[in-house]
Length: 127
Image (cartoon, rainbow, N blue to C red; front, side, top):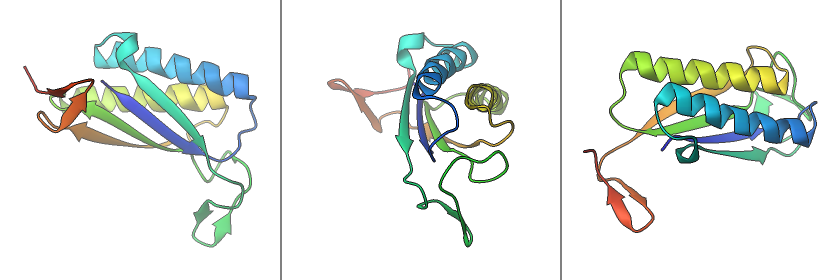
């Protein structure tokens, strides 16, 4: 159930490139996480120009060296530190490549705990 939420400034790549990158990152996360592609979700939310600051430095568009897309990856608990690092690295490299912003991605990893998630009509518990 990995869910990747991305907030970013307007990009230098086209909307079609962003859409294809979202699909590709879902596929890559599913491979690294060990789940079906349909179980990985990714969303994109654009930050309005000027509404993203690093200290006193704001930006209207995505840059190569600052103002990285801010991402949160939520996954069900139970993965090892090595597995978590692998998923984070593949997500970051896929986004960096697809958005053409090498090494300028920020991702936090959050664990969804057994009994603290509802999907569809039921509480999800670790089996």
